[in-house]
Image 1 (tube, rainbow, N blue to C red):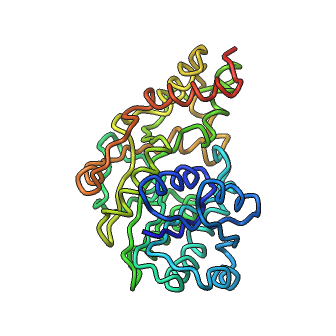
Image 2: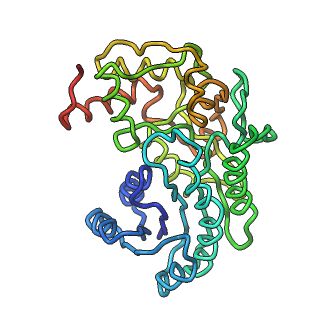
Image 3: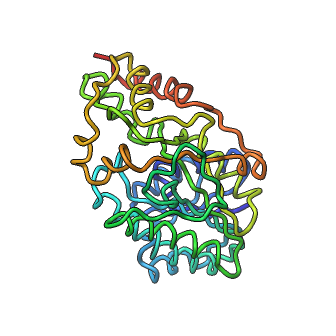
Length: 317
């Protein structure tokens, strides 16, 4: 397939570009900057410089370009989002950006459209210990600013899964970790003994970014039109357990525990870590996409990430 990839130089887009090319697909990568075009060309993709939020410029840049499918990985989150405002640009990419890319799909002749979504499309509330399936009704958004974030996620899915003329698929990713996803920053904090953890962290599902990219290739090739798929590893955990695993991978002491109320000083991340727990059920992705994560647990994946972290010059304290 010839694939138009939005967000081609981002956290998952970099891995996805490589995996698509390795699987025999052609990649037309969208990037906003000339330096991104250089990276894409070096990787073997055809770059197109355009902003997905500028519909006229985007469609003009794609004049004469043909593609069989569009993959939307456009987000604007650098590292870990601490504040609500860190998510505002991504909310726009999930609403107006998605609408513009659906127009682009028509221009390039694509008949398939895969979009990124996120586990909190189900709502920033405590979902308990039972893993959440794709066919379960959405819960409350969480109130306040959380309504804005969840509204954008749901609008993204609604546009794509209900679009006419394309086979739409949505991937509800768990939290990413990996060598390009901000995990190095957590390893650095752990090595310096500056990484705290909540005394009682909420439930969490995670996925290595390479596994998320592999699931995206599988969804492009085998996903059913109009369907959403959860993408997470095999071993859900809590935020406290995740941060313990980061410290262990860094060869550092376990994080010091703080009362949950201290984390709530961060309006967004504090709620995620101490109130909005969720585990994802991935049986559907395994069954229909024939997808199995290379890194079944966060400890498996963090071992590889920490090796890369050390190779780049970081060392435990």
